[in-house]
Length: 337
Image 1 (cartoon, rainbow, N blue to C red):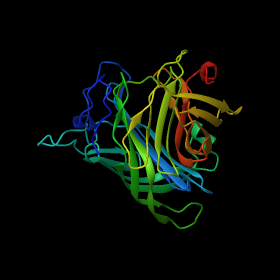
Image 2 (cartoon, rainbow, N blue to C red; image 1 turned 135 degrees about the vertical axis):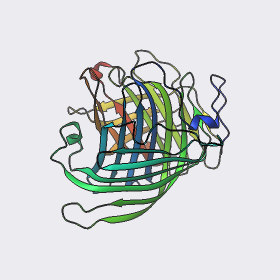
Image 3 (cartoon, rainbow, N blue to C red; image 1 turned 30 degrees about the vertical axis):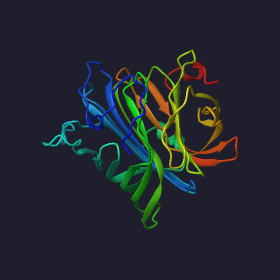
Image 4 (cartoon, helix red, strand yellow; image 1 turned 60 degrees about the vertical axis):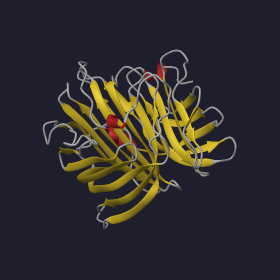
C-alpha cells in the first residue's frame, strides 16, 4: 500500500505519519485513532491519543467491548506531555519515532513501524473501569470496578490512505492482529485473546473544539471484504462530506458526498442511523457503547457515544465497525436528520 487518493487539495506524504508543528490555537490538537472489530462482531475496541500542547496535556482513551461483555474503559484527560516528551523523528528521518505516553496507572507505546503501511500499539493499563452500564462513563468513575487491560496490536493497511479535502486528516482501512489481555473481573481469572479482525486508523492535526460542533463518523467492513468510511458534521447545510469505499482486493474509491440520519433515545444514546454511502446505502445499529465525556477549559461538557455497530446494507451485505455521534452542548438541535 502507499498510493494516495489524489484530489489535489493538499499533498499527503509519508512524513505526515509523524508529528506536526503546533498551531497557535489553544485547542490545537494532534489526534490518532485506531479501532478494531472481529469479523463476526464478537469483540471490538479502540484507542485514541490526543495531544494538546497549548493546553499542556494529552488525552488517552482505550476500550474493549464485545458480546456478553461489560464495557472496559480507560479514559485519562490529564496525561502529562513532559513524560517522556513529545514525539520525534529518528536521526535518519526515515520514519516517525516511537511515541510513549504514561498516565495514572497505564503506559502506552505507539509506533509507526512502516509509514502508511503498519502501526503498532502496546498498552499496559492496570486499572481500567468495568462498566455494566456504559452510561456510567459520563459520571464519576472513582467507585467503578477495575481490571487490567493490555493490547499488543498491529494495524496493517488494507487499502490506500485517504486524505480529506481541505482538512489535515487521513484514514487508512486496516487488517488488525495481535494479543489482548484482560485481568480478572469480579474475582474471575484473566484471559488472553489472540485477536484477528479489521479496523481503521485515523490521523488528524489542527484546531478541534469538541464543545462547538456535532458530527457523525463511521467506518466498517462488510462480509464480502468491502471497507467503507463516511463522515459528516452538522453545520446547517449540506456539502460533499468525506466518503470512500475499498472493494475486495481493489483500490480506494472516493465518492461524492455522504449523508446520515440518526435516531436517539431519551438518554441521548443513538438507536440507529441511516448511512447514505453513495452506491452503498446501509443502516448502522449500535451493539455496544464505549462512551467518553469531555470537559472544556471553561467547564462545558460534551458527550461522545462511540459504538461498535452492525451494518446492514440494502443489497444484503452486512458487517461490523465503529460509529461515533459527537454531542456538544445543544446537540439535539443540530439537524441530525
